[in-house]
Length: 203
Image 1 (cartoon, rainbow, N blue to C red):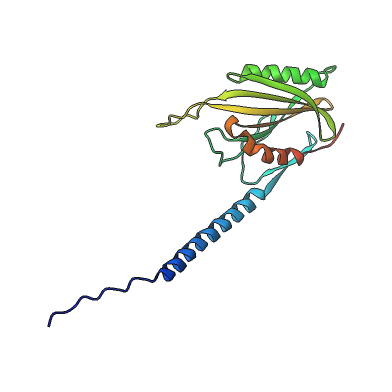
Image 2 (cartoon, rainbow, N blue to C red):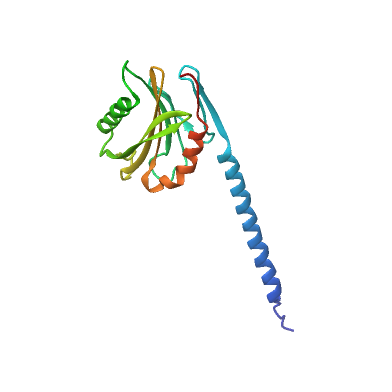
């Protein structure tokens, strides 16, 4: 007697539909959990304070802080920036010669930026209030060179930046935000959160 091969029964349409729904729901839940985790991580912040400069602020905990120098008090960059240029917040200070005004400081800083940055483009300046003080906000763009490295063929990046300048006693504080110009809108809220956290003491 010849054996007859047995084949599994084809699932009913209803069973296939339920299986598809289970897969879809599993994927949706995983995505929502991932989004919630990412939001929680991005929502954490690290505090920075410099008593000598009379300033304190918060920046995203996931951002990487670079070594500071004599005039650069703080520089923190987003390691998950979407392009070769890492979106960065920095705080600098510089001495204000006796007799110079905020306008003089802003003019001198704009000149130094134009000399230091490639393809510098002045996009304007305006008076504003920052931390309860009069401030001047500079808006400009420049071209950042592509990072080097073997086998890398990255193109230079057009960077859009803002400098908010205030004078506190005999020092000027310069708060800079910079990101790839194509992604500046994506970082506007994060930069505003950092700037909104700034507290300054002294005159």
